[in-house]
Image 1 (cartoon, rainbow, N blue to C red):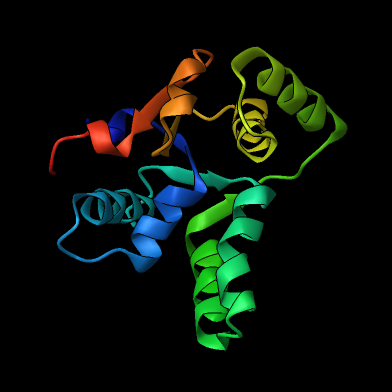
Image 2 (cartoon, rainbow, N blue to C red):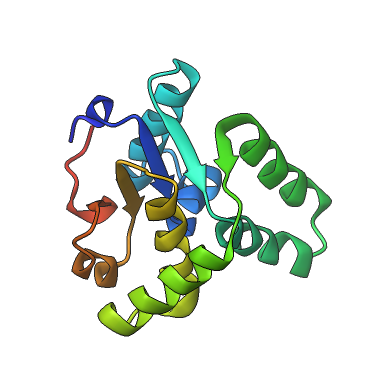
Length: 145
């Protein structure tokens, strides 16, 4: 998929993990490297939900890895815009959960993107394909770049 047609991209936690922890040979990692390269060239903006940031920090904090925790903070600060969560975000997340049977954190991440007018969402959860309000790029469905 030509990512340059999008300006604002919401990343799910899994997509961020593929970039941060992925093996260089992995198709998922290579796709995410392509996304970050577009960010670096000011071609797209990456948007994150505060839920994604929290999910990214769980393992480094649990494992007491200051290095991994610092890497997450560096990634977020250098490549991403974390959008604020509002009461409207919460209501939208609840509606998405009810309508599509998503887990609440997933619904909240999607609601953040929709509330902040992203063009697409990149992730790897088949359940998100049910949400037709936004273009969803499922990493396992994408060809090798």
